[in-house]
Image (cartoon, rainbow, N blue to C red; front, side, top):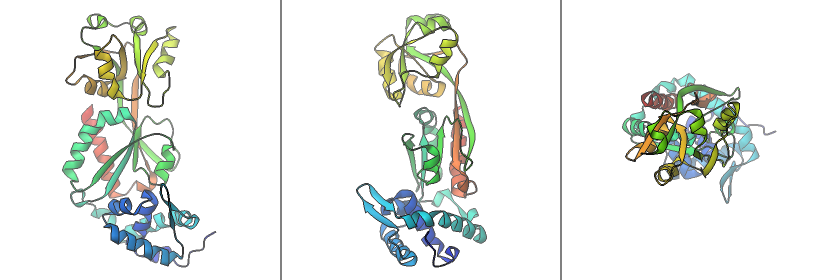
Length: 306
């Protein structure tokens, strides 16, 4: 167990923030950008941190900078100290997006990104012209772990459960609809569940799953559908629809993007099925004014999208 040589709350707040940024970004340049420092200033801060804690703290690897064992032990103490110092100095009320040079990172399911990115990017650019918005795909490491280590500020996706360290709220409920080319034989008639199931379908599956929740619902009706085309993203859907009689079942907001400027028809899905999109964040960021602002942009984008 690493024994700290001092009360960590006595360490310069800027140094603690530099350490925290390095833990999150694992690179000097990105860490500097995260808290609005120049690269030389961040390198100097790292040198001071190494002297202060008598440890390398971060070692270079092929993939970036990896924290040492001591750095991992110090990290939660640093986060706690930052919260205590900022609360004592009442710095939490000082955030101004118009002057921010920070980096705000959201992990997003693709359908959520399609639904929200236009309004989110527009509001972000208008309110925080000097800041950077990162929208990253959700894959590999669990979202809770990425929130825990600060790789993501928020997660926007369909979330079944979250651990006690993560807070969440529902952003929107997006009904699924059916999309097809104009003049498709189905477009001129009321779409029954039997007619729907009898079609050849496109399935959007970033993870490569060969069936989805709708297939399980159809089984309850004694029906099955044929997945004739599996694609990883919604980008492939418009071209596939335009060139065939295939149909796709997608969230309503994604359908609006797919149909924009193209010859695509949108029909109601003959069963009640919707995607519930939630936003989650680590509870340590609950009172952070910058993160509160960022979450408010996501809430506004979801509200405007309704």
